[in-house]
Length: 295
Image (cartoon, rainbow, N blue to C red; front, side, top):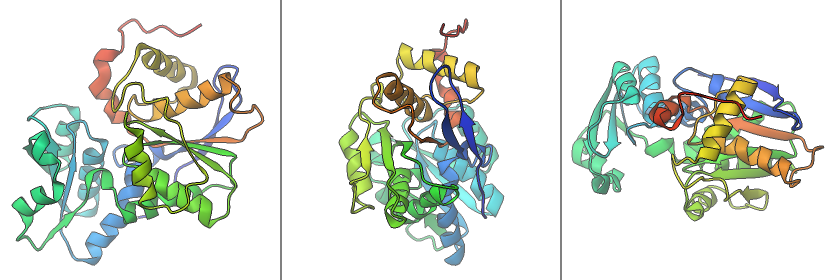
């Protein structure tokens, strides 16, 4: 169950070359940090001799799709609680093909995931609870291994954060190996305080944590014309596909900080590409049909 991702240089326009940890290449569907989070959860489910995974997410959730693909790959049944009204979209379709059974629940009921789990599966001996996004200590452990694959430390490491699990794993590794690296976390939630709080649940020392709070573009899955234009231009210029929810906001932050002189051109910068490209399918209407590159 060991998967690794390449480390590749990236040149965009006249900006300095940065390095990208291509976790998006781990697997077409169990992609990026989703595999990192699921790895030890699946190990734990096997250890406990559970055969049925139960997890949670929104209708376009990368986590639900990745979990469904992982369940099929490793021989589990899987059920996904989906937040909100019943819909049909590409992510729901693909996760169903991988064998996921969906239970759509109201946004209010979704807030108490443990109550939902107990309502449907309290008397089941073969089910295994996986929180939204795979969040938890086992997921933090898996995410810390991203940096273990690097040949050397970097001055600045950038990643996106929703639940904060990936960031917590990275920060734990930085501290446990006495790296001088700064971890720049780009919260995709407008309420960045909740992301910092989530990270601090797993990490005692946050002295090397830099919260980049100005790049949420309105909040989770929100976009602006500026961000859409950046995705179009960056992707067509580099061949590296970004999603609008997570990775585009990370790369935008990096180049904005270079542009404003906050990052030195001599800095050794690493971006963690956490995958999630399937989420773009839910944002197609935001992209104009006549795509033009920035001059």
